[in-house]
Figure 1: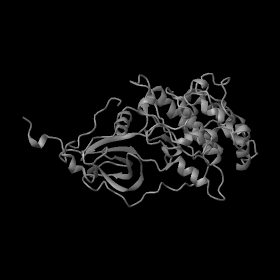
Figure 2: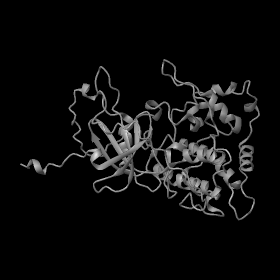
Figure 3: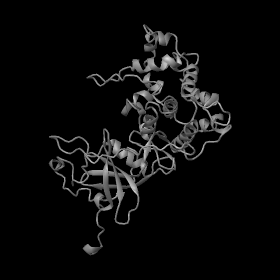
Length: 402
């Protein structure tokens, strides 16, 4: 029988990391910046998941989102996907420790959108898109759909490395037990949601991620969301409403989709809603066209006319059109996008999106408030009837897809 001294000591988050401050919070938990200690060198982002709903019934366990993210993060490894350092289970809480990135795309966009600031350099945008598509290609080749790509979920390190983060809504799509619609009727933040999702598609593909990449590309160019609609909330019956306003915003630039161009359009559950979408909306009846939108942005950004200076150019427009394609079967894949002339002609994209820009971006804001990692457990967990060491601080094992 092993002696008590040979039993490994459980990991405790505060033994290994010094919490610097609070970064952000979301539906499932909170994110903190930390520094390693006791021989653990470097800066890290620690995501603390809340236990699932607690109340009179008692502790109900770990959220499905946390389980999915743990399962995927421990299996994935790519320079353009945020690296998972370790997972610690302690006092009914899950801590996922990630490499730290000093910026995200939303912060960079906001920096440039301030008055009297120049647009994001075209060379930086090309590098960001190139790295983002490489990370997405890796995910798709490993049968992972991200399903929530948006600027806030794309991290950027101080070295200009772009990394896809936040896999909380990601799903394996190789052999789903049910249609992905069954368990997750709403995916992707509304402004980046693909038209097949807006039209109620019961089956969808990784093409939804490429539509989101197209929206991100447009936002990097214009410094504002290209399709900034208002989301219609679910009713008391929990039925998913038709997102009329969001679909209108898309149609105001791309026009309404047609069956001639998108053969499966009429099979969409919300297809009938398109008939009256343009009623009373002259912008839908006479759309701006993506071509006009794009060149207006390029003109407003005043990119240099000097041929030696890179501009988004006509190839940038062609790539954007390929990503913002209504028919998901015709939409560019990540692999096709990486082979596009936008990346292969003229100046090749660099691996450092800040190279040559000379711009100093502010570091991610870290607050000294709201640090609940110092506490040994979340409020109310003792009502669950589980002992405080019910997880024993054991490192997480690899989990199958939930």
